[in-house]
Length: 126
View 1 (tube, rainbow, N blue to C red):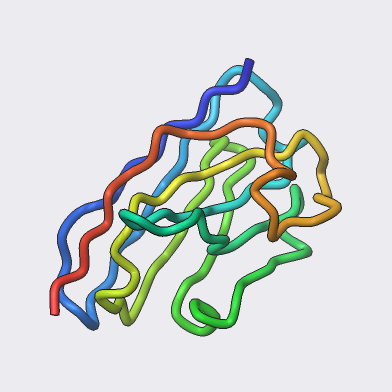
View 2 (tube, rainbow, N blue to C red):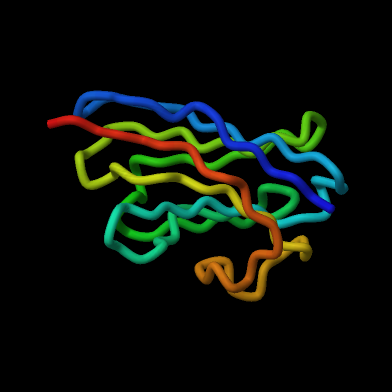
C-alpha cells in the first residue's frame, strides 16, 4: 500500500508563493507517475500538474502554466509543487496522487491515479 502525505499549505496573499510537498511511503516512488489536483468548495476536482517517473514528461493546464512548477526527488520519495503568483482562484484543497505506471496514459484525468493523499489547504487572499 502506498501512502501519500501533503504538506506546505497555508494562507498567502495574492501574488505570493507557496511550496507544497508530498511524501510517499509504502511503495517504490520512482515506479510512479505523479500528479497534483485541487478541489475548491462546490467545484469539481481539477488537474493542476503531472510528472513522469524520471521528470522527462511534465504536464500543466493553461490556468497554471507559467506560475506553477512540479518536480520530484526520487531519492527522497518527495513530490513538490512550487506555486508562484498565486491568485484567489487558486484557493482549494490540494491533493497529490500516484499512478502505478511510470508514464500515465492520461495524466490529466483523476481516474488515472491509484493512490491519493488527504490534501492540504491553500487559501489565497485578495
